[in-house]
Image 1 (cartoon, rainbow, N blue to C red):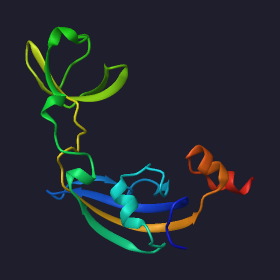
Image 2 (cartoon, rainbow, N blue to C red; image 1 turned 60 degrees about the horizontal axis):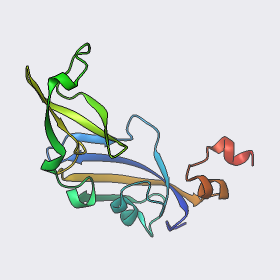
Image 3 (cartoon, rainbow, N blue to C red; image 1 turned 45 degrees about the vertical axis):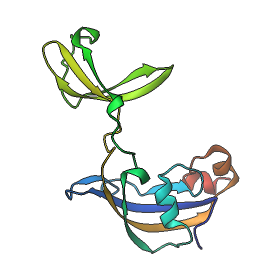
Length: 161
């Protein structure tokens, strides 16, 4: 069965940065399932799997435009440390949500001094070139409940319908 819109696609994958470090992988987790054409994975992944079938392996590169975008300097801010709850230790790499225009925005602390904290609202992988290796494990028709909810049904849920 070929992959096209509204099919459930299950893949195993490994994403590696240009230094060879694994960014993300299904090596120690369940394979990833998604409904093709519903924008639940990166558009470049949907494009790469379109028309293919179970058992195929694909290797391709994602540049920043096809993945998490270029780094945007306007998303980096230096704020007074007094804006933070100092009861908890503040350290580089710490992630939290801040509010902007009523929306939660994930940010990462990239620098801390005695008086200031630098926060970065870029996705951690923004600006990165990513190499993807994936194997298409399964392709099947999506059931109505999956198309309505956008969520993949478990085998137990599928067989109890």
